[in-house]
Length: 619
Image 1: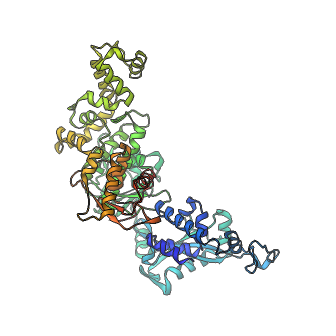
Image 2: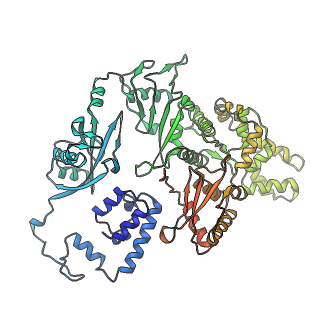
Image 3: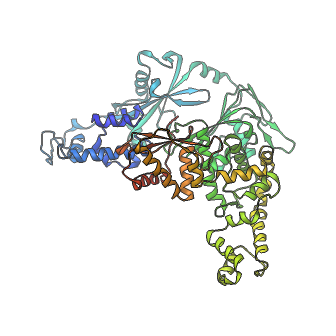
C-alpha cells in the first residue's frame, strides 16, 4: 500500500480499524478515485474525510500516472486476467480452462459482540475487538468459523474481557441472528448474495447466562408492550407481543428496558411497578431515572414524538444517541447531541406540521391526535429545561396562549410575520393608501384567508386583526388545549417579558451573531484577514444560512443564552485538508488561516453549511 495515502488517512484521524480494512482489501489511491461515494462511505464514514481523500488520491494519481502501469491492467492482474510479465494491454489466456485456478476460498469479516445486561455491544479494536478479515475454504462449517473467531479474539484462551472459559459463545450471521448450523460458508454466500459476509462472535458471561435462565420475571419487551398498548407509540416502532406480565404486576430485577433496540430505560430501583389509574390509563414512574434514546438521523420528528408520549419523561435524565444512515452511532455525546437532536426535530416540525412565513402556527393533521400534540409540548418543555431552547419560529402570541393562557404581545405584528412577504407588503400598502392597492390582489388575499366581510380603508385594520386572531389563536385552539397543561409550569420560571426578550435576543441576525464571536487577542495578518472574511460572510448571509451557521457552531439554530459566545480559533490547515470545524459542546469554531480570497472562503463555508451531512465525531 502507498505509505503517503496511509499517512494522510491517519492525519485525518480515520479509525485504525478502517485503515486496516483498507490495507487488507488493497484499496489504493487509483481505486479510491473510481469508487462511488456510497461504496467509499463503508470505509470512510465522514463526508468531509471522503472529499479530502478523493482529492488527495486524484492529485496523486494525476502526477504519477505516467510512471505506473495503467489502472486497467492493475485491476486485470488482481483478477488474474493478465500475466505480470506481459506488457501493458497484453492479454493472457493461460488461466482459461485451468480447473486448479478455480477459487476455493472466500473472504469473510469477523467481529466480536459482548452481551451486557439485555443488550449487546460491539467490542472495539482498542479492547481486542474490531473487524478482522480472513479467508476460509468455501466448505468451512459454522463450527469452524466459530473456532476461528475464538482464536482471533481470544488468542491463547484469553482476552481483555476475561478467559475463554468464563463465557458462553454464539455465532451470529450478517443479520445478527444465530447461524444455521447445517450451512457451510458457500451456502451462506449463495443464499445471501452479499459480496462480503460478516459473522459476529457473541460472548455471554456465564454468570449472566445462568441468571437470565433462572430469572422467571417477565421479559423487558413484555413490559414495554404495556406502554405501547396504552400510549400508542409509533406504528413504525411495533414492539414484541405481551404474553407474560399483566398490568399492575411488579417487575423485579430489571436493569434495562428497550423499545425495539431504539430506547433504553435504565432503572436504579430494583422494583418497577406499572400504576393503573381510575380511567384505565397506565403510567410508569420513571422519575429521576436515566433514559437512553436512539434517534435516527433524518427521522427525529416521528421518533422524538413517539418517545415523548411517556408523561414522566419530563422528570427523567435523557442520554441521546444519534444513529447514522449506515447504522453506526455518532461519536458525539452529552448536551451537544441533545441540542442537535432538538434542532433537527424543530427543523423537520416546521416543514411538516406548520404553516406561516417567519412566524409559524401548527396546523391540524389527521395523524396527530391528543397524544402526538402533548408529546410535542413535552419536547418544548424538555428543550427549555435542559438547554434553554425555545422554538422562536412559532408565533409569540401562540406560545403566550399556551404558557400563560393569554396574549401579551402585539397580535398584529405577529400576524405580519406570519404572512408571506408579498402579502405583508400588500397589507402595509393598504394601510397606508387603500385606494392604491390592486383590486385583484386584494380580493385574492382576502379570499385565501376566508374573509367574509367587505373591506374599506376605514375597517381594513380591524378586519386584519380578526383574521389574525382566527389564524393564530382560533384555528390552532385544539393544539393550544393540548399544549397548555404541560407548558403552563414554564410560567413560574419565565415571565411574558422574559419570553419577549428571548425572542428578541435569540433570533439569528448578522449583528447578533457577530456580537457573540470572540477572537484570539494576538492575531497575525492572515488571521485578521480571515476574521474579516467571517464577518463579511455573516453580514451577507440570509436567515436560513445564519441558522445553519449557529447550528454548526453551537448545535442549536438560535443565539444561545448566557454564556452566549462562540470562540473562534485558527489552525494551519491548508490544501485538501482545509475545512472549518465546529466543536458544538465547547462552542468553538476552528478556521483555517490560509485562504486566497473572500470568494474562496464563502464558497467553502456555503458548501459546508448546505451539505446537511454534519456528523459529531469529536467527543
